[in-house]
Image 1 (cartoon, rainbow, N blue to C red):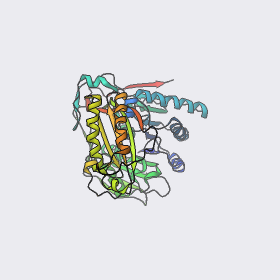
Image 2 (image 1 turned 90 degrees about the horizontal axis):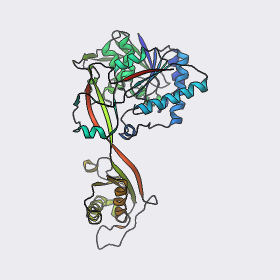
Image 3 (image 1 turned 90 degrees about the vertical axis):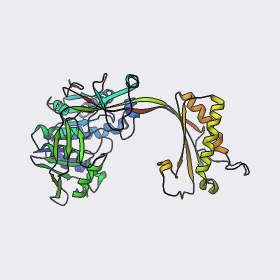
Length: 439
C-alpha cells in the first residue's frame, strides 16, 4: 500500500493545519501538492512568474516543510510557481533554502525542470492553433508537462524535497504508487480525484485529503472536520477540467474509468476500484507556450440612468461604430481590436447570453488591444468622450456618465496568448527534462 497526503489543491490556496497534522500522524509515504496550472490564463507562463505572492507561498510552504520533517517522507510540488518555468522553480528553491535556514532544518533538494529551448516532433491536439517556426520563436516560455516517469526519476534521487517544473496535475500523485506496484488504473484514477485536494469532498475548501493505493484500487479520506467524501462527490470529479468524464490522457497512455465502481466504506471515506490504464504505443508529453500578442489599455464607465441601462447594447453598438470610424480617420489602418463588455448585463457570454438583463446599473468596460502600448492608449483615449457623453439619439440632451478612475485609461501592458496546444513525441521520457540534486 502507498499512502499519499495532499494538503490542498494548490500551494497558495491555504490548508487546514489541524487536518494536515492528522495526515502526518497517519504516516504518509509522500506529501504531494500542485503549484498551479493554466487556469488563470497565459500571462503567468508568458512572464514566467507565480500568480501567488512570495509571502503567501513562503508561509504555506514553510508549514509543509515542517510537516515533511515530522513525517519523515519526501515532499514534492509539481508546476512550481503556477506555470512551472525554470524561473519559478528557481524562485521556489530560493524560498525553500530561506525557510530551511530560518527553521534550522536540513533537507536535500532536487529540481526537475520542464522548460524547452527546442521542440521535437509535434502533433496538434484538437483545437490547436496553426504554428510555424516564427510563432514558436515568439514564445517567451515553452514548457513540457512531466508525467509519472519523470517524477519517479526525481523520487529515486532520494531527495527530501522535490521541486518540479510543469507537470500534469496527476503525475506527482500517481508516480509513487505506480513505482510501488499498486494498481495502475487505481493510481491514475486516485491521482485525478485527489489532484485538487478536498474539491472531491462535501467541504471543498477544507483542503487536506489522504489517498491509500493498493493492488486493486484506492481509498480516499478527507481529513478536515466536517469534510466527507461520498460516491457522488468522488465520481463527479472526473468531470472537473476534463472534456470526457471517462477518459483522461496522460504521458504514456490514458486512464479509462468506464468500469469504475464507487462505494462508501465509512461516513467520510470512499473506496474506488475498476479503472483501467491503457498504455500508448508512442510516449508523448503535452507542451505549452505563450507569446506576446499585443498591448492593452482599458477604460470603464458606469451607468445608472434607467433609459441608458435599458438600451445599453444599442448604445454600445453605436459607440463601437462611431469609434471605429474615428480611429481610422485619425490614425489610419492601425491593427487593433476594441471590445465593449457590459458588466452586469452580458460581460461573460456576450452575444451568447440568453437571459434578459434586469440590472439597475451597468458598467461598460472598453478593452483596446493593439500592437504597441502607444497605439492602445491612443485608441482608448479616442473612446473616452463616447463613454462619458454619448447620447442614445440626436434629439436628447447630452448625458454624463461616471468614470471610476482618473485618468480613465489604464495601460495593462503586454497581453499574452497561448501559442501551443500540442504533444511532443519522446523516445526517452527524460530527454525533454533536466533533473538536478542540489547541494
